[in-house]
Amino acid sequence: MSNASVAPLRVAALPFASSPAAAEKASFLGIAERLGELAREHVGLAVFPEMSLVGSARVERLRRGELEALSEPLDGPSIAAVGRAVDATGVAAGVGWIERANDGALYNSYVVCMPGGARHVHRKVYPTESPHLRSGGLFEVFDTPWGIKMSILIGADNYMPENARVAAVKGATLLVAPHRSNVGGGAAPQPDWFVRAMPARAGDNGMFAVLSDARADARGTCKPGVALIADPCGAVIARGASADCPVATASIDPELARQSDARRWLAARKPELYASLMASETQSYGDARPWSPPEREACARGSVAISFAVVGRKRPTR
Image (cartoon, rainbow, N blue to C red; front, top):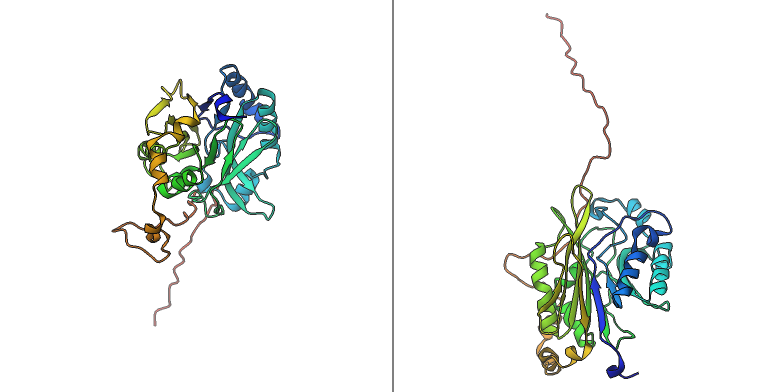
């Protein structure tokens, strides 16, 4: 099928996180209902936030065993339930969860479930939330039924411009950027910085970018964050209007990406001049320090009564 015969893809960024409950999570979370509504609006792809199946849990505070209790393999019940909702509605869905790999390693992962059973997974390269999460090591680009090449960067993976550039050089014309803002803690920068950065990533690389952000706070709640869609010129073409209407929806035409000025400049790159980007020795960036895995916050898990007695011993006089 030629690209000309493929209708533009309509994408929705839904900045909602949900709380895990039972094995049949997708129906409990309302994912099936949301996808059904989007199908009636002719949406083809729904983008939920980073760790959208983890709910409001503050991952940076959890011990290894607690993270394992939240984790599931790719073929676990949560992703299977999302897949059934995708097949029932015909709307592809991207969701985030804590993945338990075959070797027991834990990842902050994101999967795009396609109608028909295809699954495309990215493991976060910069898991700033917890030292118990292992880093992924790949930036993959995959084909879609809409004539669009797609890539996924999770949260802090988007903070470094090189990562989006790698996806663009590999041919991506749509960047899915799920995000989770930990309000009042964590290693993430100010949310407004990241919101401004995403259209720049799109404009620099001649791709569409879809940001879907949920905001977890210290009180144990998770609210909708920013949802926006930027075009290959860096213009924001859709944004959630308010807390009552947080969803952003827009059509994605891959031909606009292929014809963008940024794509022509990508073709004019001179990689032989960029050897310094590959340098492995320690570089100096003024007062900046490299990111390091966070230490788990100490928090009260209960109380233990402790009493102290001071005993004085009177010595006899001589």
